[in-house]
Length: 396
Image 1 (cartoon, one colour):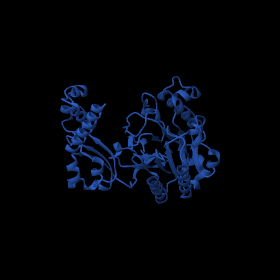
Image 2: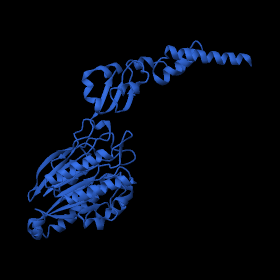
Image 3: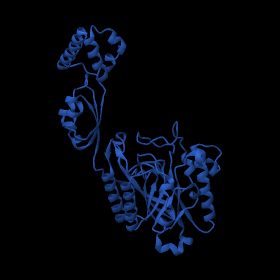
């Protein structure tokens, strides 16, 4: 049996104000093409299908189209909910969708209710007792305070609720093995110890997410994790697929993709990386404005989404407009002036106290709020305004 492990689609998410639906449609096209070309039996989606609990109509339509196309390509789908999803809304019509090959696992009550696939495909369904079954279990995102009592967990924390969920699955697997071989596969949207976080993953709990240890998943043939956006292997049978697209500049160096997992009677026999092509590259550049605008080494970033940090001693005027003459898709511009420590060693109040006149106060304020001295033209305009105020007060 061949599984495709994906997660964290975050349909409907924007990237620093730029809509990503077209890029997400492109990802779906690639996924469907791979399902067809690689004869994938089951597509796993380990949570955060949507980016928000109330997705827009066009976002819902995109997921609908994706599920229809995947099943038309010959694969089943097992999908669980993440912390960004509304489990209730995502799980709507689950019994009806199951008839079409889309299996939703968004309820605590369904944690130990697997989706069963005969090992070897439909042609071996009649012999599943002998050949065995792949049992796919879905652990949705578990908010400890809400589910601890329902799961019988000792404490309302991520470890205990995940342990309680896993123990339910283990008991079901043991019961099913009395009738023949069972190869359990688990989807879980959680933070397993050993994972590497990136900025676009939001904490799963106030004060940070409690990690769960890898040995919780030792008894399963494969564990498909979701939540972290970087594709990574925590153990040969425990992996994060990562998100299909970069959702923050901290992911600029990620190679986005998924895992193609082959199972037989011996368990996992092969895991192959799959790479998705991104419609636009991400670039994080740093330097002075003149260097960035002139250096040939930055040419590759001219068509990328850019996060740029300017290091000029003083903040350049019209910085964003000038940066975009070369890098039109600059989405984030920040400033880290060289020598900034020396410039800010004196407090703003002390700098104002040292000003010799009102013009010095005004110029000091401009320097404070934008890290750039007043230009000759600006100083002249301020001098003229102050003189006009002085003359008006003299007439009163």
